[in-house]
Length: 343
Image (cartoon, rainbow, N blue to C red; front, side, top):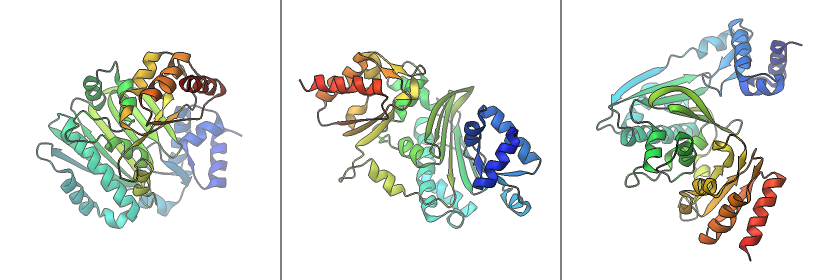
């Protein structure tokens, strides 16, 4: 059975398929999967719903195909004096979002859009912002882009980091902002977690958060000027924004929990030194609950484990460190450091 037949069989059984699933069951690259899917769409054997990596492919239907052809709405604004809530109200009215989105999706899009536009207003140092909104195949996608300093570069300079990879990792911790007098640093943290698919591109780096397959990636891209954010969500989703907030806030509504995916910025899969641990922990003293996700991390050095689970833990005894998805070798190093911390 060739790859296209495998794809069609999967769609027949499940009703739909996504590119990431094709990569897994066919054992091919993402580029090859995309090529096969494009050809199946072109031959009208499949229909594509959505316009991002979160798109799914369903059996072709002529009536459905006609309904999916909805052009994007594009707007350009001067950033000076712009008010994000008023812009959202105008766009929502123009596109009739209250009718087209579920109540839950409407609240989420309102929150995410105003947060991302506010970031461009306050941080980008650009003169204009470009906004694109598309409702395509049951998926609402908006894009906010500017030609300013760039999100990763702004963070890198503010916190004196070595490169954009460290800045991206830092950004996902939450409470990390270059303008603390105006921002809590929560916008990207929560927006990236409530989206079906969230992408932030700046300079030569893309932060890609795919919550449908629980994947976070940092990818090299062709350099761009400024920052581009793309947010996608199913228009009839039933996600609860308040539940997300509650998961990371305490009884006093204080944002006190974060999670760090250790594998984000270490290509080799191993963390060894104390300096790596200190970089990872930078800014985390602001939280009371920290989840450390060691998924796909092959090992950690004694110095790294000691710095996190003994030195940092002793310095901040009120912080709860919760390691997850540890391999046996990682668990051994972590438990050893914790035992020494108790002596």
